[in-house]
Image (cartoon, rainbow, N blue to C red; front, side, top):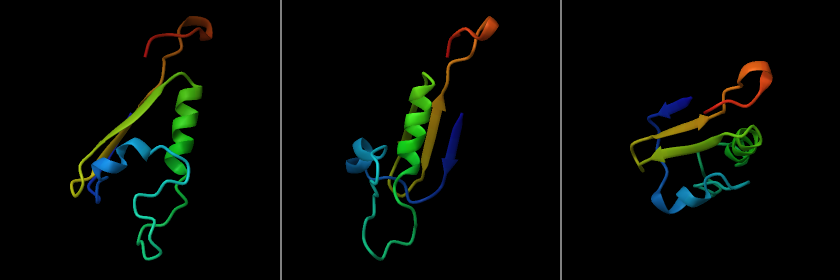
Length: 82
């Protein structure tokens, strides 16, 4: 599953921190985009707890694509392949 936007993108220096709790790319008091910086950290926790992986591709000024993969359940609820 992937979600793409055409927003402001994420600067390269912030890529390693983007899934960290309370991290905001723009933490200034005048930022226009709200939020507490928990959404992506929670998504990462949920996806990894289910045996999946999550990531993104982004270029500052050109938007971002966030994606995740989850394993497919095999017969009788067993683990399958991703």
